[in-house]
Image (cartoon, rainbow, N blue to C red; front, side, top):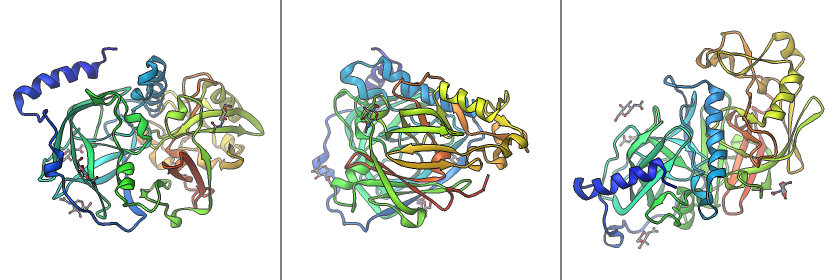
Length: 418
Ligand SMILES: *[C@@H]1O[C@H](CO)[C@@H](O)[C@H](O)[C@H]1NC(C)=O
Ligand SMILES: *[C@@H]1O[C@H](CO)[C@@H](O)[C@H](O)[C@H]1NC(C)=O
Ligand SMILES: *[C@@H]1O[C@H](CO)[C@@H](O)[C@H](O)[C@H]1NC(C)=O
Ligand SMILES: *[C@@H]1O[C@H](CO)[C@@H](O)[C@H](O)[C@H]1NC(C)=O
């Protein structure tokens, strides 16, 4: 399959031989920084919620575009490249979540999107990559194809500093030469499953690239091989490497295995049953939990049932479902049964924050729902995405080592903030 990014890579290879882009024999041993300290763990990395003023699509369209690329790529892939194409960072989002990540020695700060739906870490979309004394070109190239854009460039190994505390050596970093479809960020911090990196390395397309979590773990820097993710409505969030932050959740964390159903199982994927008003609208369906998706996407059948039950109408301008105050007053909770536990989104948790209505093309006082249509019929192996609107109400743990996904309630689970 000759993709846009593979064509670009041909160009890059040619360029590399003439413009000094460091494509050549890796020389890691002589210059790799030696010695590292065992850090205290877990390590919290704050991240910031950004409202993107340059969005180019309605919010549900942008989420659907991501959904379709996650799903559509899976259909077109050949078996031994199956995992290769599931790298779809969030682009064109109304709301993005970024963290400041230091790369190099001394570190240069980059503003990177946090993405559980992809696993490469790369920079250069806006701020140019700064090579420092710790930067080692590997001679490799990388490319990741997205639904609405792509990135291609060369690979270096470098020191990555997270939260000024966690210093990860030998981290593969993509340095973008071409990047399209990223507004207001410098690149991606991909914290999804490592298999998603397969096919992103050129020419070694069967090789995987260790994620920052993998490297931190194998370098002995983390107490646990996991990442905790805590968001809050209308607020910034926090990633915790090597454990969880108990101040961000209440009660126990309940774990389920990553779903075996593909393509959801290639991601941070789970099985769940979704009910509204006492009716199951999705039964033991496979889907994913994703920091790169803003809304809650449901398979078309489930979405239509939800729409009928709430009486909501589709608002042309925002692309979201809209209810009247009377309909809102009658709404029920939406329930998610995951691994024998029940998670609830109250009516308040099902509405878009009113303070952000105008940012999404809505009326100031309108009541818009965060449930949107994925565009796929149920039973496709990717029947939902529990996006940020879900993660603002529940703490998430991605236990990389054991391939488990955990959820816990937070002080925001039942709060009326929207
Ligand atoms: C970094 O890579 C070099 C060369 O592959 C290796 O010798 C060294 O042990 C690695 N360091 C760490 C901390 O993994
Ligand atoms: C990186 O960002 C932090 C604050 O976010 C700041 O304290 C630090 O000085 C920055 N480093 C550089 C090199 O700008
Ligand atoms: C792009 O990077 C420059 C610094 O190189 C910074 O001043 C600017 O704010 C960045 N733009 C965006 C949209 O992040
Ligand atoms: C998820 O659902 C599928 C389809 O019903 C089932 O085969 C699988 O065992 C379930 N659990 C996991 C962890 O995949």
